[in-house]
Structures are given as C-alpha cells and as structure tokens.
Image (cartoon, rainbow, N blue to C red; front, side, top):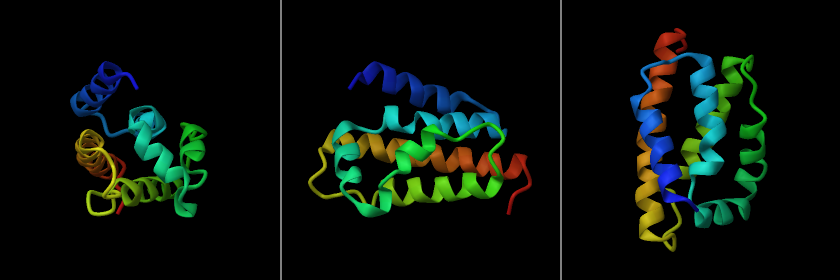
Length: 117
C-alpha cells in the first residue's frame, strides 16, 4: 500500500470544491485504492460488502442519483467508525475515519449541488 498515493488522493478529495456527478463518481471509484489492505481483506469476507468494490469501479458518469446514493450508503456502512472491526490496525482505523469524514462532506456537497433530498 503506497501511503503517499493515498495521502495525495485524500488531499485531492478535500480540496475539490465541486459537487458534480463526475467528481463524486470519481471519488467513489478511487475508494478501493484508498482503503487499507487489511480493511479490504476483512470486508471481502463479509457478505454485505461482497461485490461492493467491483461495483464502485464500474460506476459510470451517467449513473442515476439513486445508484450513487446506494453505493454511498453501502460504503458509509462499511467504513463507519462504529462498524470498523476491532482487530483492524490503528493506522487503518485512522485512515478510514479520514475517508469517512471526507466522503460524508463530499456527498453533502453532491446532494446540495444536484438538489437531491
């Protein structure tokens, strides 16, 4: 796992003021790159997240808002600080918390920019 690549992606997410569909879809598509390897390994073992990362990679720019919301909610449930497995490395937990916060902020921006309730 390349920490500098992950740090750069998180910084890009935080600095992007846009709330358009393309920006949010791009953010969702980069999640499998950003999430720590131990989290990915654990999540692949759970039926609820099976196929989630593959489906994120396949999101297109013309995806319906309902599909974006579904993907967002699945990811948020998976990386929510209260739901993270207790045996996950401390560094991974800290990274997930950062991803969780940025993802929430960007989804709110996306919702407001696209007038989605």
